[in-house]
Image (tube, rainbow, N blue to C red; front, side):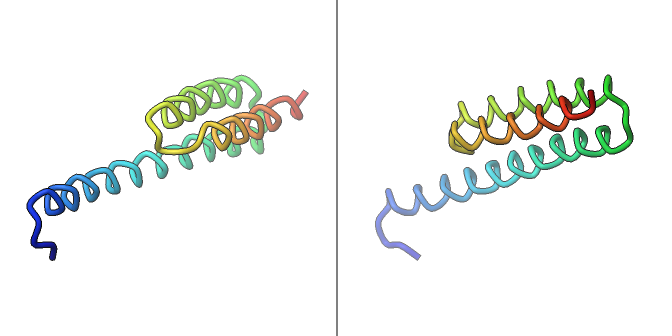
Length: 87
């Protein structure tokens, strides 16, 4: 454990951020999975709705700094590609 007061505070805030970031990343995986499940089931409307929700979550995570904006763009592209392939 650190002896410096500011470092003790940083340890606490870093832990809070780690837990929050982990929860957000887990939620992102869940939203992307919903798109994949709907696409495999062949339900285009549900897949499109799930993709829209996933894209919003990805954008929000990128704006908060949980994931990089390029990673968010890549995941959004992949999600939308799944929906577009359904035709």
